[in-house]
Length: 183
Image (tube, rainbow, N blue to C red; front, side, top):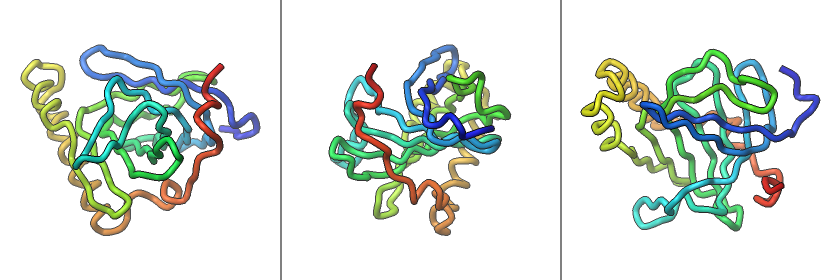
């Protein structure tokens, strides 16, 4: 993949089982054969809080790292003042192709479990209830749910061993203000 025409607009295609597909606008900052780096406004219908702190709200910004053949993506989150507030990790089905076209990612399939990591290194497992709900409704198989739990446990172990998030994620900063995403 070539970075010659970067940054450029891109849509992150995000699939929630069984059939909810959403598109999120962003700016492709870097594309290699192993990862995409996409700066994107945070889009939520309601602010998300953990331990009394808002971690996701309209006007916030995320720099997403989407990896080939990994069971997770990582978003480095910033508040409206562009202060770094933590990492959001989605457990996803691995993709073997990162892009489905010049301006679209391959579809990322969410496996419900998420991990929030504070700047101090504390972590919170999120959405276990959503995974249980999906299991009960038959939207996800037991083996796939078990894999999601295993991959989450692996991420937590890597975090505790100070091997996660990777240095490329830790060292990045936003390019510009959120207004870059408006047409």
